[in-house]
Length: 254
DNA sequence: AAGTCGATCAACCGCTTCGGT
DNA sequence: TACCGAAGCGGTTGATCGACT
Image 1 (cartoon, rainbow, N blue to C red):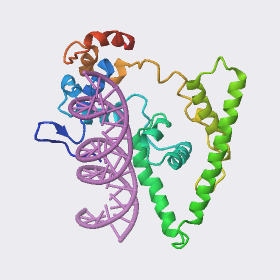
Image 2: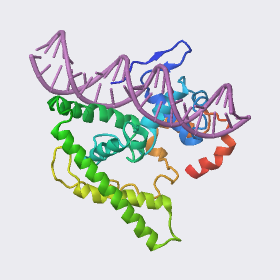
Image 3: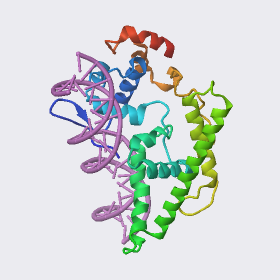
């Protein structure tokens, strides 16, 4: 399911990434960060363009990415967010921890779009909108109204509780969690089933509050083969103009 | 067993946005 | 304020797999 590897006229590799390339890119970014995507491949020893490296890191190698099938909760969230935001895949991805915009976009095109096409083909051409679509739209509308009311209620609650301790970031997170939790309990899925969806916090119990801010710890013994440990540890092979300023960061990591 | 076709998803491409000068 | 380069974003492509004939 990957493109055949080839080399373009500039000598840059294209197509499927090899395990060795993945290891090089991962090792480099974990040690030095992505200070400049265009120059990074040269320093990391990769014959790839910066864009390709960025994409590979963002969509496949970045720690914390979830692979595999989507939960019912995620499916519902994608549908809801797409109703609200349209094709703003990065915005949708930002609200689904561990999923990438590319992944969500693919998922949408293969699952939801197909479904909506079926709905349109089944619908009365004169009516312009199917009963199913209409009902879905009504559900979304009700849900939006509910979440909007709920957001105001939560905001009032927080404002009353403590004006001094108001932390917009954590409150936004909490609001999102509360809204999703409550709305999920009343939401119907697109098939019209009235079923329980786990709340946001239930689904992502593995992600505690500080997860994304914490330094990423790498288990060198299990994550990398022996031949690439030296790359991470910087004995040789990697070079970075940022070595001095990233040394502190590296110390934090290892 | 071989061929066909649709589904899937990694990767590419080109346009837009953002930030620095 | 205009320009330029880098990063980000979204649409599209193409290789592979599995189901079906």
